[in-house]
Image (cartoon, rainbow, N blue to C red; front, top):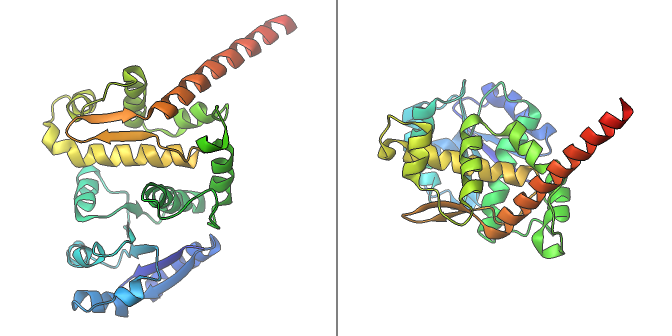
Length: 273
């Protein structure tokens, strides 16, 4: 079970969020007092160590968020901002710069909420070596079952047949463009300048660095969501991004298998006509 702390100025206003999270098997603590302690610069490390996730409530203004973020970033905590609507590109870049890891909106379905919270969190924990997702008792059974099927050190040499289709259906247009370009490049890094030119032809790359990082992070989370726990995308500092070799070859094999299956289905359909 993952423990969540909601920092709020009005505990009553966030009861519904607390209940929704509890229905997803999270253990949730709703607090105004811890927020006050953070804003007063008190040492709350003994309290925060019990939580994996901190949600900054809608009741917090943007200045409030800016004030508490430096304190929260001192701890190894997954930080989520909840707001009344989806943030635009500028707001996403601002939150990312502050250290916010993800964001929620009131219209998120339970499935979407779980995806936003657990996907990036487990990815970060796995990459840091904090937890072995194949052997831990984490709550998301769907993800764990997928990890067991696809973990590369368990002898699996293929991805689920529908893995690419799931990615194609759930990737945004920007994510798809980057993904296909990465597949084309294989071992050659895709630079941030190339990504910027592809997605925002008129923009300066320096203006889009935060947004590019957000897109790459979301892609990693979706790879994880649909069943691949191994390393997927590597950042070459000062150069760009490249698909990890093992993952690239699995993707190529999955694409070949998907094409073979499509041809077989087409042939079978013709025989029935």
